[in-house]
Length: 272
Image 1 (cartoon, rainbow, N blue to C red):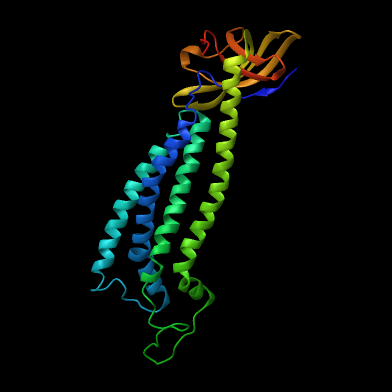
Image 2: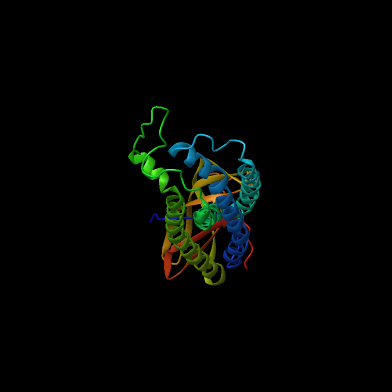
């Protein structure tokens, strides 16, 4: 019988502390992105909005404060990006952990930008004319186009779009946390109560994927159970010195009451 089993050679097991660590690291990351959203809105987007609508001298002699905000924005983005990179590996060195850290980092970016740009709404510079551009030399005023109206409501659209992205990421992240917790529970139960046997690799194939410098393989593993031999297909991330090959031994843990629930590990993996 064949079943797809996501086995992981020598997998990191961060446990529940992974989630708490990501949330703790996410607080300063969110605040840094909020600073970037606030300074970016008032130092960059506000000036481009004015130039787009009806004032072409937004970067003129009185733009000293805007230049300071641009500098502050650059520092805030640098700090936020560094913290986001730390969150990328905060979920662990497994594929699931890196994916979890990436989604958590994306959430802090969207949430921070929504908060920062939302706080900046009252401080946007109002255009000198609403509904029409300032008159040209001939005295004629050109009415705003649909794009101009979209730009006019930019102070509200930026935080609204960022908040919508954050909401979607919250749902995705919650589902990822639940899946990760369920996988950890299954793995923990197999390590504690699963039956441990030796299996043999029937077929191994390199997936052309490297995880933290280690190759990832898809392996077909045959092992003996109380009801006869079974074959499972599992993914394994191993060191170069432990790369699986046809006939090599691996450690298999399975639930006698549910033989489809299997964990495949390198040979010689110690019991917990």
